[in-house]
Length: 381
Image 1 (cartoon, helix red, strand yellow):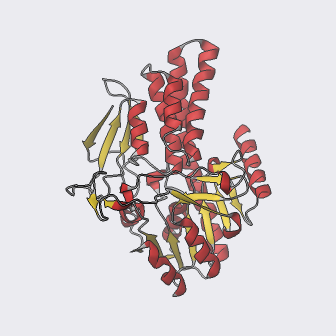
Image 2 (tube, one colour; image 1 turned 90 degrees about the vertical axis):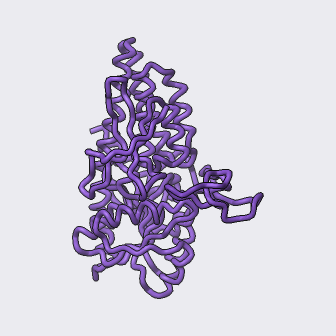
Image 3 (tube, helix red, strand yellow; image 1 turned 45 degrees about the vertical axis):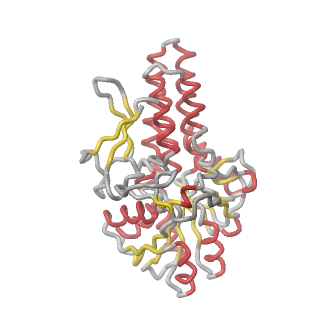
């Protein structure tokens, strides 16, 4: 069950953006509180989830989104089911299947469930097992915040190496800031670090069709951070490259295959092609958990297909609706739409993949495997 509550939000990030996800324990029982991203930028409304089913719906509706944050949300969803006495295995399966492409969601769910299972087998105490699941979710939340800061540092150093003249003009796609992370994000965090260091001249923000995560969310975060930014339609990116106005492309990732193929918000692959033609670095920023060694290549990545009405209708907060999907129709009734949520960029078009453990360039399966092995050693030690 979920309830919406318009709050001022006492828990806010340094940029003034409300905390995107938190665990609360009011007298009526524990809840997961989310910033409803479907209502931004018009309203900062919180969505209160009292069970895993509500969290699943929040994930599917994109009220909570972004690869790292989905992992955190999945882990808290398992903890919520455990603490409230629901069937944990059933909740975990529903959460893991809510969005198939983002590997972090499955990673978070499995981590919290493994903690729950281990504690239950060891103690036989459901309360201790629930506490273990919650501790795993909180640990993942903290680790993601720390990873975000390290990615920002590695990414800024790479930008400075590739563009020693400074004054970076960076193009980004979709939304990769604090709205998708336990910290300040992935690709956006790199741009933010450049801004704070006085080395970001311009952030070019793709509007990101069809749900406008760039226009609604990245522009929202850039404005809150006092960054110099300009919004453009997705199909204007080519002319921007041709005019020599882009120094680098920074994007996130929802799944990185073992060979270095990158699944990200649809529209990323065309940017990689443009970047290669115009000799502009195309940089992917994502935590190591986004690398999926069990997915051998890009062709093996399951690409989520979204409802057609997201293309045939336009939705906006506080606007009267008329279409079947709750939006304003912009195409004739009955129009079919092709609406993949992601596309896949092959590794040869990726200049570098930046993670919290460092950057991989050139991008190869061997280099990624070595990075993941190093990450596991750091985690174990």
